[in-house]
Amino acid sequence: MHIKSVGAHSPPVGVNNGQLLLGLCYLPTAERMTVAVLKANNLKLVNETHNGADFYVQAMAIYAGKIFEKRKTSRRSSSQFPVFNEMLMFDVPFSKLDHVVLLLAVFSTTPQASLSSQEVQLKVPSKDTCIGKVVIGSTSRKHTLNHWNAMRSSPRRQVIQWHELR
Image (cartoon, rainbow, N blue to C red; front, side, top):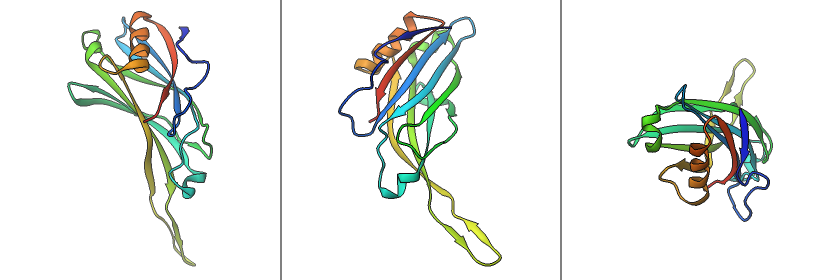
């Protein structure tokens, strides 16, 4: 797999929610799209309790307004600059490629509390907070559309680009 870079050298500047470095690749023979979630930069902490937060990325492939596949990365802990280096695969027929939209959201997970007594220890479920999201597809705008078009015009090559989280 060849790698093509579209503005991947430095993250966008002046964004409050952070940035996400993604690689997109479409394999026409297999009709499979690969989303490489590489790393995040300057992730916004919702409040001081999120200082030791774990982060993960959830990706959804949407066709005709409906989610047809969901994937998520494993959690990375305690840094506003997590490195994921994970590949998420989506089966996307070539005939539907122009109508598919990818929604990627970065979540922060913080355990709410731990209740304990002498014999029983209960863990309260963690609370996930969306830090920001990015939408990539043929209907997106500006640099997200450029990334999508670069993937479409370079089959079997991973195209890497930073995206602002909104």
